Figure 1 (tube, rainbow, N blue to C red):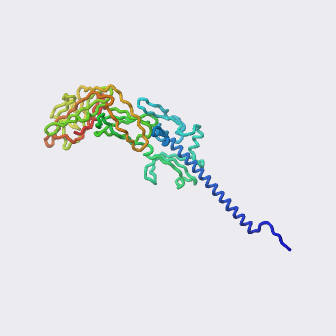
Figure 2 (tube, one colour):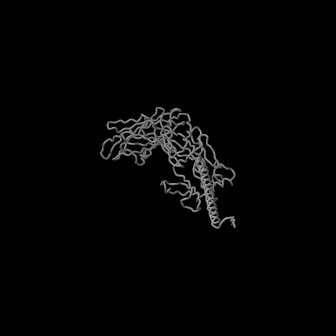
Figure 3 (cartoon, rainbow, N blue to C red):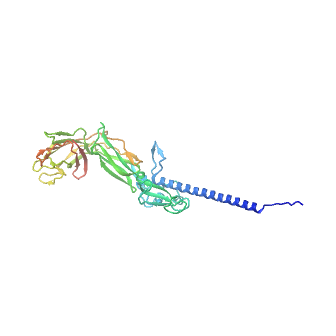
Length: 403
């Protein structure tokens, strides 16, 4: 008698169920992995879009130069909240000053989606949680640099401060630039005392910061936000290169000439003299434009002497009687556009004098004398700073002279 068996044995059934379970678990793991990767990708994409909204897209260039600077470029600061990127609210509207060639104000929205509800979705991570946006400065543990702003997701474990958090940081070098350069005349000589005003947005309003070139023609401005900015040249009265002369038997006299590169006439009503000579040294005579405005040994004057009403002279601020007028060029210079996109911006040499030169004024200090040792004091190598002001007290020139 032949026995015919069919179907699965118990062992075969158990084995089949185990295989099916293993495959099912594998499929769940793969599906979970793929879903997690999609959520991470969504989070990274939203972080990227927000970064570009905040500080622009460095990939967008025109004529080999970056042109996109986002909210930072227009407002001159990082947003207080992420919503500032797509909701104007009370933020000042963008305006452009054609004379200064610079603008400021909200010119959004700064994301690649227009409806507010879609823009708001950019502020969520792939798991549907709100991205955190902190403007509290903190030191990045990995690189030791100070982070001005941190934009972060809790990551897959939905727990803050763990290893799977996904974040981006805005460091000082990502936001602000040090702007520096030199001013020279048409002969290539450096020019000191040239005023330069940098025009840039500050809280959405066009602001300015003015500096003067030092004795080497160098200038620098710090903490200027990235973006398209401009420099307005205010040369005013500047030291004419090659005019500094030392004379006297002990080299105790100093003379130099200032020129007016400004468009309008400028008048000099007072000056401030700063220098350091040890032991204390004072001068006897001051001549402006060939006219003696002070000449006395009782007392002499120096960098920190008090007012001398009878003579109308202060050691640190000297009224010069009637103002001395210096003719202007009659020609207005233009503002120069510059682009800030790195932690340090080296501006090409700025040349003055191309639009013409105005009048000049000779300034002379005579007979510097060391009253401690009772000898004439030689002045070569001494750093002098002369600030010239008009009758209203406005600065019309800052001259650094080192004989």
